[in-house]
Picture 1 (cartoon, rainbow, N blue to C red):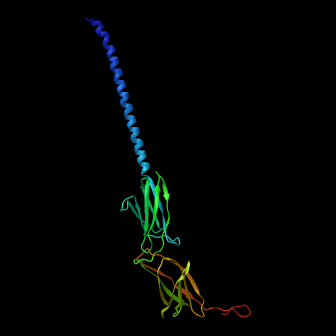
Picture 2: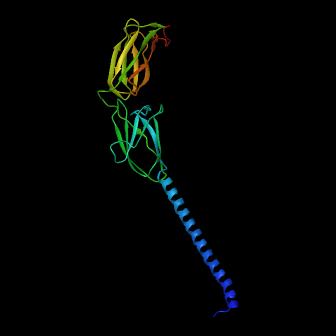
Picture 3: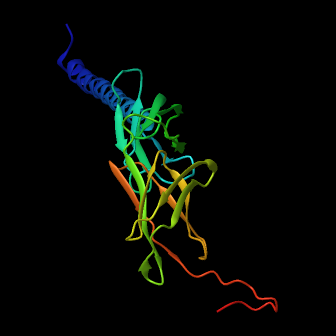
Length: 241
């Protein structure tokens, strides 16, 4: 039989062994906790990076003029758009918080042909994509017109000729005559930059540029013009008063 003295000597050894095992268990728990926290942090950072891409840009017409109220749609592989935005008065749009991957970007505006672009976003990339829309001869093109009054010396000028010409395509031209109140009105088929020219025999020709857009249901540009008597040079080089 083991004596009482031997039993008493073995108790401290058992206590020390138990303490060492407890320390090892606590250390393992601490290592496990740190490992899990690290994995969660890495996963969170990866998820944040995956959904922190952005896409922005401007929508303009063929002549570089901004197009407000254009619809900008971002598709993945679905039929319905994943994100939708409308351009502001400067033609600007912006999507944020996007996941990395490929998208289809579709721009549309009444009076213009739709434009689609394939976009590939990487991680936290901030991509800039500007798109120009081409005017289309569509059935839903809104009414666009240039109107105004032609005057001479502050008074309405009747029977003056007003010609509206596309600044980049002279074959696209329309002509009107002013009424007795000096008023004229010309229908515009396509948005863009135009030159308004008013003339009448014996008077100077007045040419004024105008930009016609198609983002509203009714787009009317008012251009008033003033003509003055034509001063012809005399033989001595002076001009008639």
